[in-house]
Image (cartoon, rainbow, N blue to C red; front, top):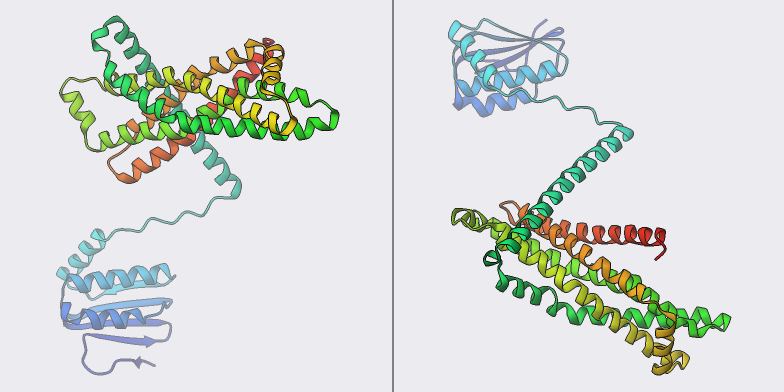
Length: 379
């Protein structure tokens, strides 16, 4: 028994005959019928067998052929069998052309398991870390090569740029570095006195402050502040130049970006970070002495006497030896991130953030390695 769901003449008739479903196109079916055809075919459900009959179609255009092919793929994906019959040679060629031109959707892969996803993410992270280390080694080598060239040919050295960056890196950072170290000294004295008072050893708070600040905290916290302040500035400055294609213009004019951009910045870091470390040491000791005077009654003269008697100069040397290494790490990472900026503002912000994180991480890692090294050699 045949059930006609759309009686009378029309562009499309849909008939259900048992398990088979017939879609009959008749007459000239074109873009004027597109909305009606799409609406009716959208309601077609998958059947075990679907027959698209074009024997009565005088003409179909590309839009209708696209709808027929889309419907065929939908029904096949739903598990049905689709047969196109009665198509004239020109209509069959049109349907074949449309089917070949329509993109085939990529199969969606099954989501990997938790372990596979973890290992994949770990592998990508290690690959990215390896690439970053290779780039870092390249920028470090470029800096050293251009520095040697500047020593051999002093006329190529950009003294004005060095002085400018020394001011930006060092002089302008003195207030925040001094204030930070002063507050750290106060905190160390206050917390140390509270603990040492339980054992009647308040005088040893001077040794605690001196060793902590001179050996570790003074230069470490200074390097962290400079990393957050200067690495981002280097990345933003060089990155904005790259976005505006100024670095390409420098190459065109015969100006070496290594001499003009990298050497002055990194060398300014090497010059100024030890000075900032000394300022941080003095400021931290002053803060510790002030709090010791207020909290424990240790006079400044007694504080200085205990400082000189109980503190070896090797603690100062250990702290300052780290400064040039920290400076090179911060400067090279900032320049590396700046040269890695793309053409968009989004890449500039991303590289600026990554430069700060990478510089701080590198400083802390280097400080840990220094601590192990000095402990092993007995200093």
